[in-house]
Image (cartoon, rainbow, N blue to C red; front, side, top):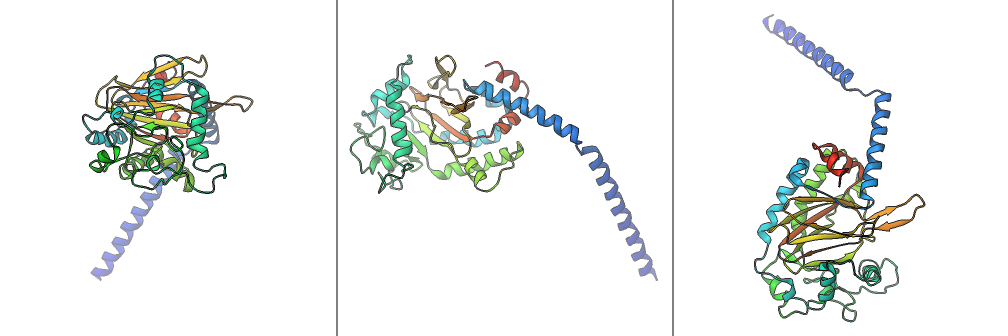
Length: 345
């Protein structure tokens, strides 16, 4: 009899708990549900903010300190830990002389680079050579070789890479003792970090995108998380003038983080689309830059962001990802004064 009373009492307790849960769930739903009118208002607000993002980034690059954009700090903390991989005393000019003229173009204070030359070079290296035209019967190089495409080219000199690494010092000797470095870029004089270093950053970036409301899945999600560039430029390193017009997986918008050992001795330079002037943005540790490499006007005509990067005296590391405009809005919404800074570049 005592056992029966206990079971009856426990049954009432569970029934009361269930009723309380239903009540709480109902209250939560009533307090958090969004009316159709509110959903429409939010959609209109988002559309207006997207217009601002497109309007500002149509012509220029937005820059901010990562500490003013705290949502990016977990990603940046992991990224900046890779400074331990810098190789002291390294100067890329010791390893290559062939692309000295391109380095001078990248570091020139004047807007005097040969746009035709670099347009054709970018097409050759980032489009034709990877057989996007379907014209090649066989690969131009062995991209999976230990030293990469530049050292395993089947074309005449300069056919696979901008730089031939023909300096007095041998890159092969350097890489033998620096397993984390790879020569993978065909348009730069510098290094990429081995893929193992990109995976933790891609994972953190994925968490960030979900936090910011990105809902894409499948192949689109994989393309979004692909590290666009995890590069290391010691002094003398640079990336040639280019547009990235052939390098978009999902969207043309980018977010980049920068880690340097010395502020102000390396930089990004770009051509302002509207007034066609040269803009120089000095790197600093913790810089964040957001931009798009491709824009379309009301008639569908495309324009591209000409830009270059170089280090004259710093060890410079950068990492970039593609980002949807909606998540740019979410990033700007996440921090105090970000919109004000964005609209007053």
